[in-house]
Length: 258
Image (cartoon, rainbow, N blue to C red):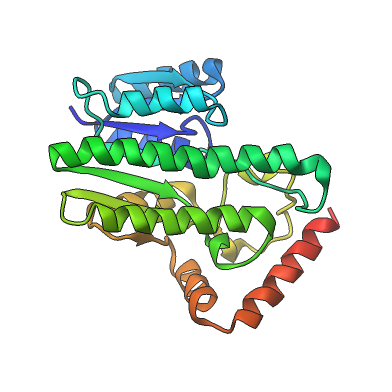
């Protein structure tokens, strides 16, 4: 039976991926820091969907933990058909405050370096078998300029496309996922007050994941669920750069007020 390894698989988008892939009969390897929550989610998925769930506690800001996950991806005796590079967290902090340097460094480790290492490990293993799927979770904020978070997600988007091009023709499909505002606990954990946002900007996580999986299976290099966010990304990518900077200034100013 095919298996999927999901980082950050116990909450938010990662948990939505876990539930959807389990519902499709896929065995799972869940990676997260909280071992108790890993065990709880694994028990739920096994009971509801009857799939095997392996838990792999790891802190992806720690190099040794990342390499341990990479070893699991490259284990030829237990092949992984899907990698969902999802682990991450919000950055509701300024790039100017020296007190936040460690936080920004951790964000780069988790959302850039870990993605690079794990994507490479999965890509090598899948290429040797001639098939596989890698989904790298970036963000629609990659098209704007809201501090280090946008910079990190722009890197993730570019990296994902670069990996897709390197693996073109090998049977391995790589898709960058660019969600907008998704109804999960992500924003609350980051200290971002999203209560005043209109309903139209929100995306249901289950719909997002189903669309992402369909796009990955079709071999699309990017997945942007929902027409409104596809339009927003088109404007961000192809519209006046001054407009993107204006929107970014407004968003940055709004965050400073909370």
